[in-house]
Image (tube, rainbow, N blue to C red; front, side):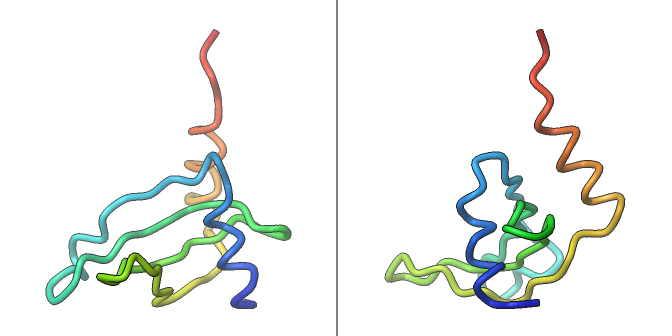
Length: 77
């Protein structure tokens, strides 16, 4: 996993973001599922007081996570 790929997932207009409640004890952590140039990624991050995003971890999305991401992009007609 390249750090640059994780950063690009933040630019995905279809990215899903949710609070990582089980791991937000000392700081608010969020989970992003978004597409990078190569894959759909899961990025765990926090936002510092200065407004900077700090990436805690990043990995390729599982099949279930990719399916959830793809299904969220569907626009009902």
